[in-house]
Length: 330
Image (tube, rainbow, N blue to C red; front, top):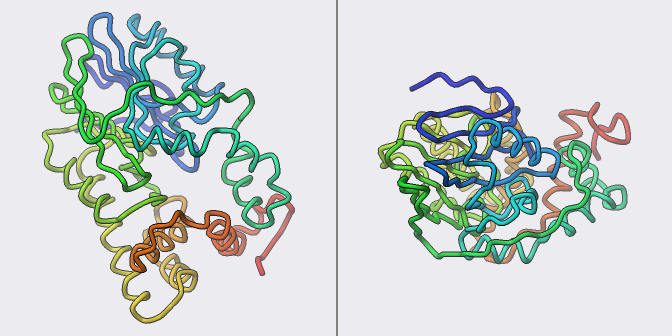
């Protein structure tokens, strides 16, 4: 496999496939993709704000004439760092899973933006949302541009003469997670089904679906994997993520069976679990999701409660990052 450099900007994967990378791949710093053939173009995801998305689209137009007018935009899932720039892809047909569209309608950008604006009123949960995402991006002027075409499990598209296969492997990371596979180029854009070098975040689950999604990728004849976050990779990185999910499930289950609550379990696990990957605080979100799965609880998570508990560990670990100055937690 080619040793791709992990630098911000547009990377030519060859034969009309491109990747746009935003290091370091942490909260909100996501990747996108471009597929072209002849005068046809398909964009995989937009970015977290309008300036970032405009910069990406400008670079794509400069590199590939077919990108001057994007024909199709595929949103791999509903999170804002993959959808908030949709309004800048004017005239494109927006394609996503039906579950992705439902989630985008439930959580339009103004819900997130209002949390950012009122972060100081939300205690620890607000402070960590501000620290991790709010202060780093420009959330001005966002409109909720939802998919105009949806599907359930599979959809085949054409970009010129190039076949593009969409597969919804969710719920996993979110309620609907789509893989974008270009068979003839042995390339796959995974959205947030694959994180490389960083802890993933399990908003939805079940974890078995996510592990199954990794197995699906590993069974394909692909060489180039463009993850939702992190550097361009191959199957070894998909295996590493699969191992993470399986090991975390085992570690959480042991503590669940021993009677620990999810916060205590998270604090034990995070101390010595994939410590070389960034965004270690996400262990708290993931363990909470696993505990709810073990309980058979299908209700959405109490997100602000989870963020507040995660924040307590985060401020102890990184007291200098607190927006109100040094904070060692309660």
